[in-house]
Amino acid sequence: MSLKEIFASRALRMKASEIRELLKLLDQPGILSFAGGIPDPSLFPAEAFADAFGQALTNGQQGQSLQYSVSEGYLPLKQWIVERMGRLGITCTPDNILITSGSQQALDYLGKLFLSPGDTALVTAPTYLGALAAFNAYEPRYDQLTLEGNRTAQSYRDGAESSGSAVKFAYLSADFANPTGQTVTESVRARLLDLAEELDCAVIEDGAYQDLRYDGTPVSPILAMELGRKGSIEDCRTIYCGSFSKTLSPGLRVGWAVAAKPVISQMVLIKQAADLHSATVNQMAVNTVARQIFDAHVEKVRAAYKARRDAMLAALQRHMPPGVHWTRPEGGMFVWLTLPAGVSGAELLARSLETVKVAFVPGQAFFADGGGSNTLRLSFSVLAEAEIEEGIARLGQLLSEAPAQTRQQAAQMV
Ligand code: PMP
Image (cartoon, rainbow, N blue to C red; front, side, top):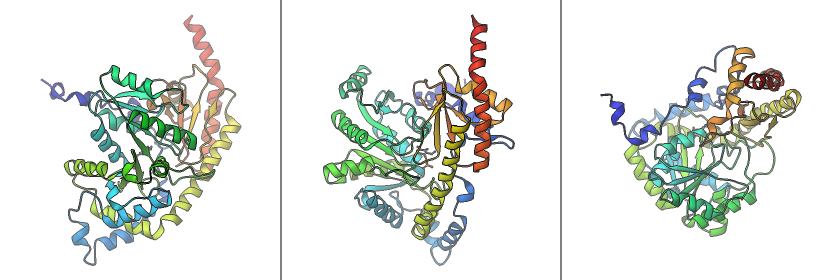
């Protein structure tokens, strides 16, 4: 007997994504990769962290930094986050905050907190792959969160009830989403809050890219809008997930969740059971570095990514053949391409790797229910502007050939 046969049913929902496996092979020398979607390591504030870790590990601080600590998170860091959240219009106290090991852990905990098997989670199509991976373990049913307002609360409710349960939350990234780069407008955020009221469900707002705005007008976080309506975070149904990964360092695994106290208290219990607390020394170092350089550092990161975003948009304009459409993100790390109908992103990737040595992520991976086969995600965060130009030129060349090939293949099939 293989032990696989006695794995819990949830394990069946945790599949290694073929795309993820493929991506491991992509970031090799000689390949221009738009696949990654990770911060540029040359922007990490390494010296500031070297000093901060040095401090945390000497001068009597080591007794605290190397010790167990509270599940809620390191208080000075929570206080710094309270101040930052306040600037976004999210008035809260340290008791409204849980420090997590990256915002990914908050997504997992929220899945654990809300989803019994068969419960409905509303997700956009496409959506962040890691959110689907986190929620999948709790065996939900997914329904598509449409931002065009063409679905009524009743239609969501009917769908959920048909599988014997209720809609528990709507998950979305409102600013510079992964994978599309798009920002949800203020009126759509308001409509989403109305929908959540009607469904009596939570809203999970993924703010992983919040600080990476390059132009345009900032839109209030959904939690700030709800607070504006209700007056107190204790009456809010929105849970905001933040992260230091895109601004300071993803490797330290420090993120946070902000919500009404009963939600945070329950998440604290989940954290106690899961890993007791996030690494104390990392939280202390992040606190020191954030207090010293956060704003100046984020300015630097924004300037670098803005130049790359601009380079990518200009290159797309220059090199893409007619029929290819793309988003124009105001921030984040991604541009989302829609290819002519019938051109497959996955097939294009295979051909691209073989011939022009350019990598990207086929879009289908980001859909809970398949779909999106003619889409792809390009990340502009890691390559230099000249490489972006070169990579997009090669991809444009390949795509100029794609329709002809597709026609040829179609002819062969009949
Ligand atoms: N949300 C989104 C939309 C992301 O793209 C990512 C990372 N790629 C995360 C959450 C998780 O990031 P972390 O756990 O590093 O905070």
